[in-house]
Structure formats: C-alpha cells, structure tokens
Length: 262
Image (cartoon, rainbow, N blue to C red; front, top):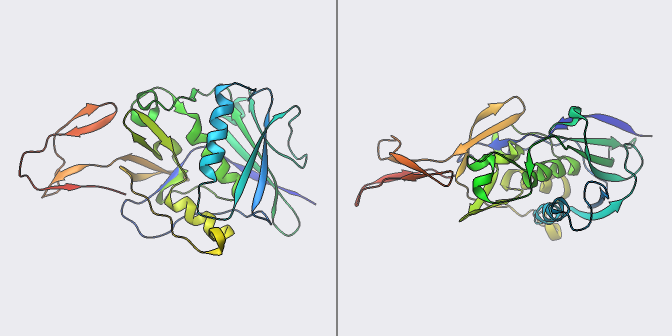
C-alpha cells in the first residue's frame, strides 16, 4: 500500500547568517541508505549537457556527510508516476514549473518512490559560468542548483525558510571560484540528512561551510538569500561597484572593516 504526498515546488530556503541553530525540515526517509534515480532517455540523452549536469548533481549530493547515497542511471525509456521506480524527466506541462518532486510511502511511512519532474519551459542553463546565472546578475536559472534541491526532496528534506539552506532559494545557495559557480548541498541540509540517515561510517559528522551569501528573509516556505557585505566599524556598508555580479568594495589602507559571512 502506498500513499502519495502533495509535492513541493522547486524553489529554495536558507539559513540565518551566523546562526548555530539547525532549521532543516524533513518529510520522511528511505528504509535503507541508498536509492536509484533513473533519468529519461528523452530528456537526458547520451552526450547531452543536461545528462552531464544531472550526473554532476548526483555526485555533489553524494558528497554529503550522511550515509545516504543516490545511484544515477540513465536511458529510462518509459517514465511515469507510481510505477515502483524513481524517475527523472522533463515535461511541457507548466503545472510542473519550475520543478516538482513527488513521493510515495509504504504503510510504515518509509519513502518507496520519488519522482522528479522539470518543466522544460523554464529558462534553465547547464552552464556554471557565473555571469550567466541569476545568482550573479545573469538571466538564466542554474539547472544544477534546482536539481540538487529536488534531490534533497527525494531524499527526505522539506523546504526551509529560517536558515541559509539548499532547500530554500536554491539559485542563491551557490559558491564560485573565479568565473565558475558551483552547486553544493551545504551545512544545514547536510545536518538534515545526517539526522535522517546518521553520519558516514556511523559517526554524526558535523559538516562545516563558509559562504558569502546569507539569509535575507523568506518567501513563503523558502528562505531568500543575498550577498554578504563589508561595512565600516560602525556597521555602515562601504561603497562598492559591480564586478562580475559581485560587490567590489573600496577599502582604505589601514581602515577597520567588518566582513559578513554565513
């Protein structure tokens, strides 16, 4: 016997900058510590950039410090809901905008199936070039952060509004090195996964991260994020100019400043 849960939309929620409080939310767990996700052969064909990006997402998810892991498979020729397989596909139906995850449960409340559907009319990009992404002033939604958010749902995480978190506004739960951005699970979502599945090798590992994004508020179930700031000693933000979607501050020699981090 299975029960279908109302799905959650693919947006994101975050943690409070500087907060030491865990705010992750969960909706259930798998009975074991692994599950296989099967990607559609139509939406993720061999050699396609979305297939490569989905593989990166699975790999990034599996870097979390819990015992839980996804195995990513491809070339599923027939996808549908409630068929005892965990599947990933694109749909032209705007009801799935931007992406949705659906779960089914057994009579004991364990997850037995999770399906992820992306709306193909969303302005996604598989590029992780920083300036092309919403996160840094670009025009495209990063597919990797959206998919990682949905895989969080598939593993048992719900939305988060009170902390800087992948399960909040995913496109601003992102880091960069030079011109390249990077998706990642993050500290609070990792805590949630450790809560559900224990730490790797049975140890409750505490994942640590530092970011220049911070929680700025919330929108419904999702935390909203913005760039951290540099202020003077009184807390007034310093003058800045835009540099590749980030703030470049003017700091005088010998000046005392405060730098914000999450």
